[in-house]
Structures are given as C-alpha cells and as structure tokens.
Amino acid sequence: MDWLPEGHLAYFVLEVVETLDLSAIEDVYARRDARGERPYSPRMLLGVLVYGYCVGVFSSRKLAKATYEDVAFRVLAGGEHPHSTRIADFRLEHRQAVAELFTQVLKLCERAGLIKLGHVALDGTKIAANASKHKAMSYDRMKKEDERLRAEIASMFAKAEAIDREEDELYGVGKTAEDLPTELQRRQSRIERIRHAKAELEREAAQARAEQLRQNAAALEERASQSGLRAGEASRLQTRARKSREQAKKLNGDDDDGPGAAAADLPQGRIASNSDGTPKPGAQRNFTDPDSRIMFSGGSFLQAYNSQIVVDERAQVIVAAAVTNQAPDSEHLPAMLELVKRNLKRSPERLSADNGYCSQANIAACAAQGVEPYLSTGRSKHGPSDHEHSARWASLHAMQTKLSTPAGKAIYARRKVIAEPPLGQIKHARSFRRFSMRGLDKARAEWSLVCWTHNLLKLFRAGWRPAFAI
Image (cartoon, rainbow, N blue to C red; front, side, top):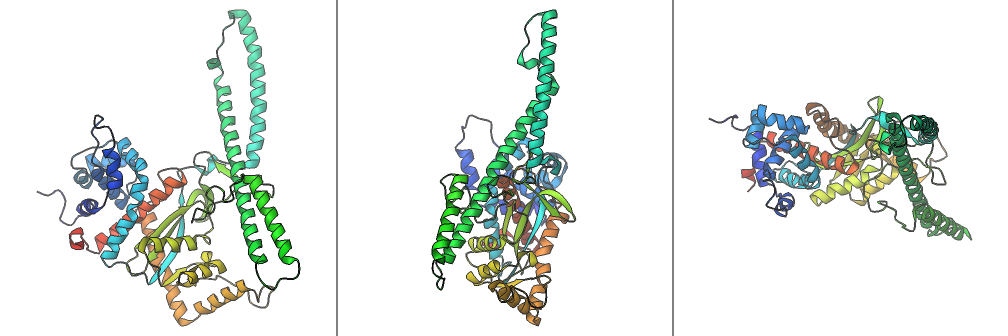
C-alpha cells in the first residue's frame, strides 16, 4: 500500500529531482576518497531539503527529525535518517550548485507554459539576517569601548600584579598565562573583537569613499567630453576628475576598480564615510554577520538583507531573484532586469514597480533593454520649481503622465497582484522570515533556493509533471 496518496507533493519533488542535472554536486562526491564513510545520495538529500523549503521546514534539526516522524519525509529519505549535521553540511557545501538550479527549474516553468514575459513586476522585501541587531556596534561606540576596555584591562593587570606579588611571597613563584582571571580573559577577547570590527569598518569606509570618488571622476570626465562647454571648462573638469582618481588610489591602493566595485552587477551597501575615507560616527558593523545591515521594515528596525524578485504576470513565477545588503530599492532595477535577460535569454515587454524604484536612471535602463517601464512616481509637488526644466523632471513628469492615462492605470494596477503575492506566500504561508546561514554569499544562495522552490510549487499546482516535458 502506498504511504501517500497519488499526486502528493513529495512524489512530485522526487520526480523533479530525478530530472535535474546534479553533475556539479555529484562530481564533488566522485572526487572524494572511496575509502571514507559511505555518503548519502545527493538526490535524496536534495529531495529532503527541497521538500522542506516547499512546506516551510528550514531547520536542519527539524528536517532530520521529520525523516523519523513525517511520512512524506520518510518517503523522500527512502528509509534513511541523515543526521542534522549531514543535512546542514550538504546545504552549506553545495549551496552554490543548489542555487544555480534556479535556472533549470525556470526552464521547466517556461516549458510548461507558465512564463510569458509580457508584464513583469519588481519588488523587494527585508528578510532578517541570522544575527541580532543588538550585536551591532557603531564606529563611535567602538572607539569608546576600546578606550574603556583598555583602561579596565590595565587596571586589572595592575591589580593582578599586586596579587601575584603577594601570592609569590606566600606560595612561591610559578603562575602561568592560563591562570588569568576569567573576567580579564573575557575583556581581552571582547577588545580583540572590537578592534577587528573597527579595522574592518575603517577598511570598508575607505573602499566606499574610493568608489564614490571614482564615480565622481567618471561623471566629471563625461561632462568634460560634451560639446558646447565654455573655454577652459573642460580642462578644469578633467583636473578635478584626475584629483578624484588620485585620492581614490590613496584610499584603496592602485586598483582603480576596487574590490568588487565595477565587477558586481548588484548594488552593495556602503559604509557611511567622511571625505577622508574614515567611517562616520554612526557607521555600524554587526559582530555575528558583518555583511548584514540594519534596515527599516514594517515599522521597526531589524538586522537584515534586501531580497529582490522579478515576477512574471502569467502564473506568478519568479524569473529573477537576488539579495543585497543595500536597503534602498532604487539601484536594484538595472541589475534585476539584466538577471531576467540572463536567465531567459530575452527581456520582458513591460515592467512595473513602486515608487522606491522610480528614477531617471532606471527609466533609461528600461529603455536601453527595450522594456516599457511603469514606475510609480509617488506624490509629486505641483507648481514651478528650479528643476522644472531639467532632464530628470522631464522624464519623471512623462512617467507620471503615462500612469495617469486609463491604459497606464490599468497596467500599473496589476503590479500588486503580480509581485506581492509571491512575497506573501514565501514569508507567511511558508514562514521564511529569517536566513539560516550567515554572510551575503550564503544568503544569496538560500534566497535562490527559496525562490526556485516557489516556482516548483507553481509547477505542481499547475498540474505539470516531468513525464509530460519530454
């Protein structure tokens, strides 16, 4: 007798996992020493992991427990009971390979007719990092804590030396480093962590300032290349650009691009820095997950990442997903559009997004890819202003005019019913509100898994089966 009814999600997950190309994972196992412990089947571990993310079970301990207590998980595990550490290690070691399965599942959705790429909607949400905001410290407080702890340690050493002299007189000489008081060891460990975080914050602030200077230089050079400038103006602009680049090199070595600056498509959260490249007093760094940032969401502040998705109108399939540590949404649009094109080899016809994404640069980015943008301009001031005739005002005014037409209103009204339901299903129906792993790279991999399991559920509910894809 079958343990589960015909057509159960667990059977669907088994069938889909069998069709996926897992060579990137299987090759790792093939290269290992055959004399070691017999590994669990990577397809079995992936099936357990995928089904868990489909039904809202993300903890490796809960997944391991479910292989004993839950019939669906027992079917997926084939009677095996991998330990929670095995499941956690599999997810961590093969996170990139599992994340890249997003495109394979997306192709299955495309083959099933669930993707049209007519109208797509872009939206983002803040997902809590695997770290507490109370473990974050500002640069100003780091400096004060450094001074306070140094004074306390000096006082404790002075007191310890006095005690040592007294004890040496009583018991003889012979005290080791391990005999340091616990309170002193704790303070030394804390000051080391603060100093390391402070140094990293200073390094990131210098990089952020250097990148800003390089961008300023590029903008000045572009202005200098334009025609119709007054006599000597081009030369002055070139001089300012050269000085900006020289200052950037001093802050960040001789690498003009900087670490991850021009190479990364997605925006990166920058440390607030002064003109000399030092962190501003309020610049913060988290001790548990340094890549995460404090962000405002739902009326409160949390230690989080900014998770972005682009959703296709036809069946609410997620066609692009990404995670960054930059709180504002605006700069994500060009990169997300590029991800859609990279994933499906073509661009959508129309894109809608709320006013957090509206800017002249984003309107231009859509035009460059032949995408018709519908970006809310939010509340705008009426009446004349100093920038009324600027290019920025003209493009935003044109967008506002387009959205005020009956056709524009009808298209933009679809945004909420395209982009917001998937985020609601992920955060509320499946209860994914916090990342399981720490670090931006790992958060990106996990968000990709969350999103392609969302697409897998769309396939399942549409009645598609792998056998029909041949």
